[in-house]
Image (spheres, rainbow, N blue to C red):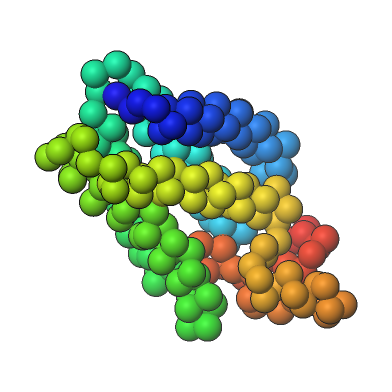
Length: 200
């Protein structure tokens, strides 16, 4: 069980993740559904799954960490494995998609970020299982949980806004230029749309 300042952090992370998960369900219910197995349907499903996994990760690790007598290394290890498997599935979707090489390369930032978050939890969980009193792994898992929340927020915004929230696309909008339609790809490498545009 976590104690001291970490307990307050885990409690705050759990409350935040729970609230954001509820809002995600509301967002998914109001986003227009796309029938069939079109590329836009796939990207919508991937975005929703990525956001839900990110929020569930922070929620599970924080809540189990607050249970008396539970070593937080175990939930961190389980969620780390789950996240790494999801990332592998995302990479498979990118490689199997009909997107261009350039669009596939644009997804590397998300893949690397997910690998960093869940890899940190995986490694930190193993170390804490061996010695639950170490401070370093606990800090690393805490950083991973916070990062997971921000990833979930970003993916949720992409799901609702149906647009790219990347730095390049955002700078293009601020400069008054329309973002490259081929650059607004989802995790599966599917081209997105310009801001405010949706496929009929």
